[in-house]
Length: 400
Ligand code: PMP
Ligand code: GLU
Image (tube, rainbow, N blue to C red; front, side, top):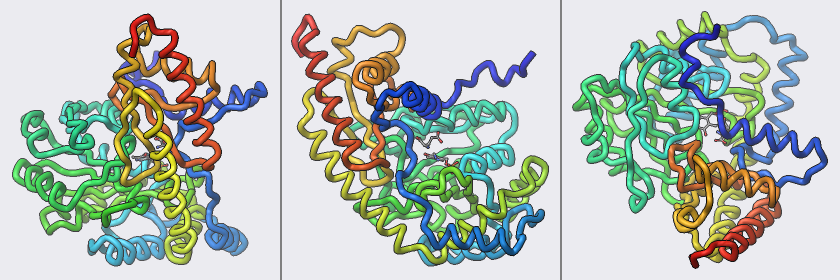
């Protein structure tokens, strides 16, 4: 028999849709994949070569559990220069992707039945990760007219005596919303007053289009002390398959995370760490080019969405997703249990376009599309969305 812990866990929607797409492609079907958030760019050449050199030098033995010293030093430089946060290398732990950093942090901080405050919509894996460590996700409703950004008033409504941690994802997956300094200050104030840690998942920080990105930990000493900043190389350096991320926290928490990591995985692949080191240190030009493309794509995709009837969307100021409200269509759509799953299945089966159902993020009236793909791909996908919606309109008995 499997452990009880699995009974409440659902597999990752984003990953299972992607697997379905690969299966359809193997059957010769030409699928437009706007589902998974995976950059279509390649790892910058300099970074790849640095990894190859490290292999040729046989740098392939066990190394330090929290990660290569030179990489932790480089991460500290980056945090100081770009984020205005001063950390020392013993406050950084490098792990196999941001997912691994988040689960290590949850294991280090949470006891059974602790509550974790989680604003909705949330990134697909957070609730499942929280349940895996036997803690409880407390889902917080946020307001669409505030672009689904959390406020201290939302927090006041949902805080419990057992609340120990808040997960704040900025820029947000799935909405692309970005918090201002003032908005973050109110949240940090609330958390410091109520002894709540903040896991600040800032994996999309470099993909930020309009305002300057502000790190939670940069706000003041209190903020830095209660915050565990999570970051990763999957998005900004297009290193999804290489699995590299890091956490920055106070020394006590960093040491606890490192102790856990020492037993679970030792440390992430050394070759990957060398590639990440060069990506951080030497590849800012490539990274700026990627971010400029995302911005151009964001503008194009929004222009196109503005011309599709019966939908609204959250205007993304960061990340590479658009969260689309299909409420008007839901009212007329004949679905069984979940509107967004049925809508996405029909869209995939009939129009061969893969998008993620909003229910993966806790919101069944929505779908998420990713623009981490070629212009032609998402423009074709949106043409099909327009066709699907017009087709549905014609089949509805009542007019939209
Ligand atoms: N956090 C968020 C908000 C994400 O969208 C993702 C998806 N990649 C992750 C963490 C995990 O990233 P990684 O590939 O570094 O594990
Ligand atoms: N985070 C990405 C997404 O939301 C990748 C998939 C995943 O890691 O779950 O699509």
